[in-house]
Image 1 (cartoon, rainbow, N blue to C red):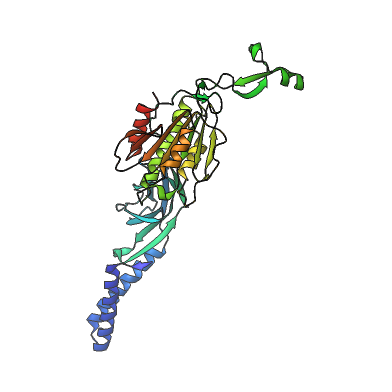
Image 2 (cartoon, helix red, strand yellow):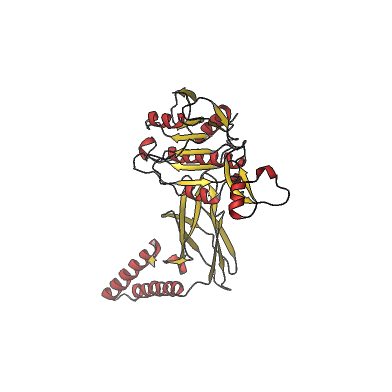
Length: 384
């Protein structure tokens, strides 16, 4: 509770009129001071009596992609049958006060306003509690009261159309140059035989050991395995506000969604090994573009790291390896890592690229100032 500017003026005037009137024995000044004192008392009573307000807040949507619009709608109903209400307020959005003003409400009226929620960066944005500021009789006193609990919105990385993946291939033998199609003879699991299964796919050794017919499940030759290696070191990126890393995460999410769209297995791993998620094929089609919501949530909460490169990230060479980094990284090690895959590419978030597409050490290097340019380069130069 606090006095408004008008309230301070009335309080000072009351003290001066009463003091000077009593000192000078001037009844007129004392009477005018008494009237102002009564006005202050009436204002105090009006704010001490609880206001019959009903508050409702809705958020749409609770999960939103980065840079998409998101807002919280605040509805205030004046449940009084005789007293009009003048209300302003503020909401804490991401720790910052976001003020709003509601028009004067007649008895029984309902007014609403939208509180924008910033989505420029990924992560969990907390907002609330809501604070309403009510003004007294003659707007002399302002009182603030918190309403409702805190809530949150999850800002996820964007899913851009990366189109697809290159054809899967793996090296035939260690040190050999020939490559073979991924799948066909790659055993990925066993299951019990059901009527109609191809008898040529029976796994006789396991069937004899378990005393029941077991059928082998092989990898799909048309489903290459994608691994996305995301450089999460803060020193690799230029922008101090983290915008470059936001675009890098958008690219990673878009490539994973492209793999899910063609029902290919995928893996996302950060250079510091802080995040390592496997996405089996087919990926669960319950999130945007079929991407697992759990993985989207992990990417939404991912932050940059000050750690060093974690060695031994790969037990074997994946079919398709996409390395996403910034312009300040040491490309030598990353190019060497990408060259170990049959199909490797390095994508660099670079605000001032000298060339959008190039080849270094036999590895395709894509550069672009934003995620849109990098995903476009992937569509045109890689997923053909």
